Length: 248
Image 1 (cartoon, one colour):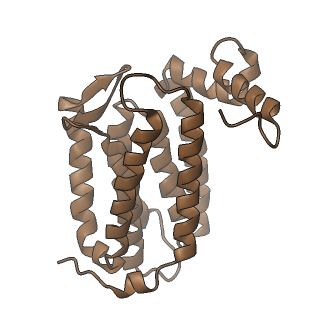
Image 2 (image 1 turned 135 degrees about the vertical axis):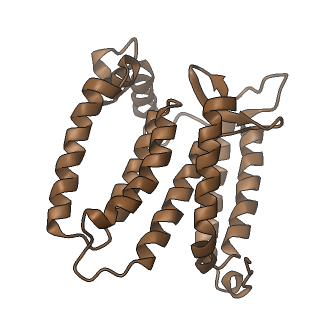
């Protein structure tokens, strides 16, 4: 059973909270400026974002009050729940823009792939903390964490959502390299990753996904087409300079 420890709030990092609130406030002010003047109908974007901030802040307070050691018990339940949602999307998910990534709950659309990021961090951290390895992990010992990563990775890739799927891969790599690995494992993982990149480019990525990557690397190649938004962003930053051109 999850138990709340009041000492966690007593020793809370208040400066971190202040910095977090400042960043949120800056985001709201920028969003208000970008969407000014407001439309006469519908909820303004900055107000929608404020609602999400408040819900997220409430969730933060709840999570902070929970002893993280309890996650050792709950992490696999959370894993099964999120993977189940990812599988359900392929059957009952809402399709928009050619992608099937959301589950409609009536008042808002749930995107389980966002939960998958947090889920994978908790699951891998729990797994690695339970294993005591003296000479470093071998490839055989990494089969379980690789499998735990591949299940949501493949389900998200089928939506399709390449960006979030790659984010799960980055989470796995960044967490795994900080545990003790044998040198041979680094070599195998490195060479396998390079091979997978070439394989994905030639066999797995769709033309529009390749176009996005090429545009990101060289937006000036098509400044009036796929690279238009990136070029306009650069122009806006350069035009505004250090102090900008006014708030509204």
